[in-house]
Length: 299
Length: 289
Image (tube, rainbow over all chains, first blue to last red; front, side, top):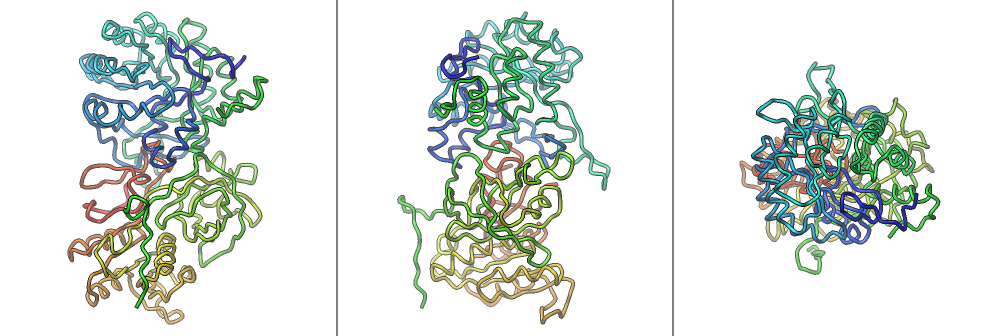
């Protein structure tokens, strides 16, 4: 596998290398304040996936929002964001500072919201693709949009005609058969799928007997979930022919290689960014070395 | 008559944030010793800039040097305000209360740590915060000493004459007061009379000081109830103040959205908009959760 010279094609988006970020695990505009120009010069990913944007602004869940656990962490952050208007007005234009394609993650709580998001975001030329964070609940049915193939096929069906931009469906592992859900996304017209999102998890404070996190249960991420993620990628790759963004506890080039071998077109780094802001660069370099292409992966 | 030197950035505004190198770097532990019930660690950060007082770093003991001593934890780094910073040496004060801080406390001289930073917004100079001639009053409680300690050093360096007030829960922790350069007024909550230390709360000292002094700029760091008492006291007397706050953090650089604190304008990420917060932005300073 040649990671240095061949560009990756992810549903029409050209990536310089196979390492991108997971939505909600790297804030490029915050990074600019913390690291300055160096972050632009050495941007760790070949595409930037934004934090999920919702129609209405959201404050997010009360803290504590994160809890470290064995080889990972649980988060109940609650999709805080400026909302569609705020994102468009304040953030989207500034993302053109980044030297890579921008993928905007969106989430609607009913089909009307999904349509509004798809329409508005896809009208912007700064946007290369849209990732559908389908793990949030459909308020009409009470079930997450990613909970079964029917829901996700309906979701895709409801927005497909609104845009020509690549649509990437992000899948949750908290389902009986993730390959079946992926097939639903494919049938609905998705151009790619990304998986896995976090696993539903809980930690109790045994002193009080109540949940440690302010938001109650949360999502588990980090190396603890990597074997679950790898199984999911392999199952989905076996079932559908769409390109796959593989993620879930990747913390090294060797981990990334396993996901590519399981059938992913590219990988996304999430929790590992918290431990190492440069993780994308490091993992790309490690992956290059494993692929026998030498170590010149810094550019 | 003290000489006032006000470091300014090229745009003319006082600098309270220094940018960090992208990524995490391995640094050598050049000193490790016990100070009261705390552990003082000094690392040599040759690749990093000099931080502002109030900024923090994310620290982790490398796995290959025993940095994972309790069944897969610690996994994430831990946030610590920098306590001393001179000639590339950064000092941190650690209290071993969980797997992360215990792994850090176990780091020996000659060992290594992984660090990233400096992150966050540091303290504002007194004249910029409260007007020309404002007296800096520094208030430290327990393990909240570090940012106050570095701020004291930076103010002394430019010719200021800060008042330093410090309080500790028990006499055992009082040794940490040695980290201050000037003569701090010290109180202890529990162990009255030990070594001539007065009994009381540091907020009592602050109240006394605010009665006697003219225009003050108050800077505080300590346990949440102490910060809330300082906030209320300053709000009631219309005194300008900054609090160095704390929150559970995974990343330190605005990526995880975990470290939010409540302000009058809603939740903000403490790693970006803080950890130093103006009291006027807050309606309360309690630790989330």
